[in-house]
Length: 194
Image (tube, rainbow, N blue to C red; front, side, top):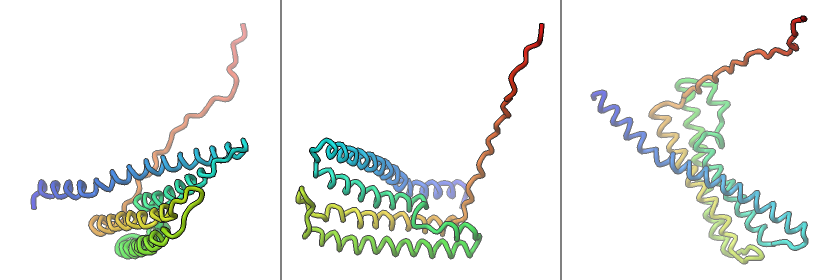
């Protein structure tokens, strides 16, 4: 296989996962919007209660925004290896032991993702029997975030497994550039006497 063929295969491999990069970006923006909406709804809830005319529906909005932000954030954090990931154990190893530990960790995360999908879907279906007040919407609208998050966590974990097995998990982070700070002169300048 020539070098050009290898470059084409690497480019195709990179393009294959680029969709997950875009999905991660969209999910990050969605998390930002959800967190901003959550903060805004809490502020309005406090304000309307202080004024003596509470908007009761704001509690439903607040809880919905909070739940979706948590579960979508967990999925994004999984993609970034910031969540559901035991970095202290795996980063201290190299070579085959690290490969084994990294694969085992991701198998555990896949198990968690499966549980989120399976039991989240069961809760989602049961949620049609309970209703939120004062709107009367089924509580299933909250539970829908759980299996959705499980699917995303599963996809991102499979991506990490495939990339890790192909390219290795040991990717040392670049060292931080040391910031050079020049000393500050603290003495008062003296003027020459006339």
